[in-house]
Length: 488
View 1 (tube, rainbow, N blue to C red):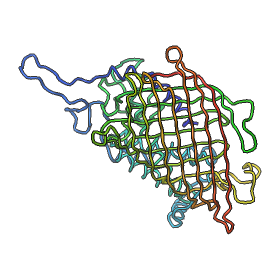
View 2 (view 1 turned 180 degrees about the vertical axis):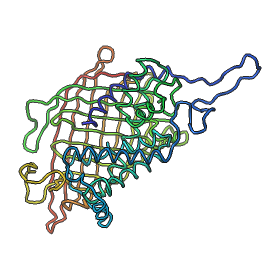
View 3 (view 1 turned 60 degrees about the horizontal axis):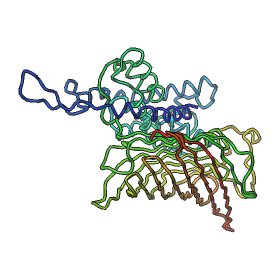
View 4 (view 1 turned 135 degrees about the horizontal axis):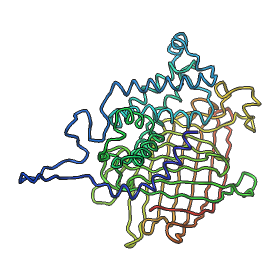
């Protein structure tokens, strides 16, 4: 699906773009030989067109951003209609019925709600970015696109969980993909090299790319907007085998192959910033028991040093998706974190971060009491839009910690822990407490190559709201061995 292709492309390009980004320094002054004064030119400021925030920035067109968000809904609707989806047969009568009913909790399957809708929301968000709107203005476009789709894009009643996932997930994925598009785009090049860079950027950020081709910006030579030139770039790819445990036995054999990619855009550890997503961390994992098993995005909304203490305060927006034997979960959250970097030696650093925050909406797979095995959709006679739905929805809280020991910028050891509480409002009524801990040890080898191992532990405790207060627990260990390739 699009989501998986985009993340693979992004992770590869984050590493390859590192050198190119470091070389990109816009002019800060120009000297006219016929005058004695130097004229200072602020990077990224356009002096010839007031509708552009900078020379390479798109024209600011508020109306067009909302019009394109509506057009995206039309395209998604036509696509569903071409596939024979009954829910795409909309009429004014279905619109009125949706408005009368209001919002409900829908019965779409897990991947549609936790992956498909956030990706659709990223298109709405980028319709704002592609028309010169800032981050928060584009967030409003994402909410508009999501709400209009829920009421007017399908015959299904408008869904509250879809509106939240599409809007918040769309903001997280949309800004990340928009910035990745600017990494790929080479605005100084011409000819075929320029064309292919624009095509590659369009694959990641389609709305911006199409607008640039339509306006002629795709061939115009200019500096990149300074907002989208990160302070640093790095990526780490890990390939190896994963052995999963179970409730009844330590580990199962044979192991499953996996590919994991970590990408670091900007410096999330330090700096004073109120520019959303000037720094973010992305992790995706393929394989290891399922085709797509993990995705995490943590984008900094605000960063501020705490006095002269060396501590750093951050506000972070997160997108989370996990699929494993212990639980499948997805969530949208806002966290506040405090971190610090300690210089152990001239070449060795230790960094740690602790956070806690609000899970606006989370999902976790669940079984009703008395049901011991989740049936296949084919066995139930129901489709993905009609149920039954074997996962619960609700708000909650999350907290966690991350620590890294690095030598010359490359990780030697890493510890990660996250705990999440979800209170089920729809589905099986229960309180779910999910925990995930992981320790990695990495030995650098020659050049960017390294070898590592990690131990993970997943734990789930579900307290059901029945008369007996029934409790179920699940715990699963995982062990991995892998090779790494680092661009740090």
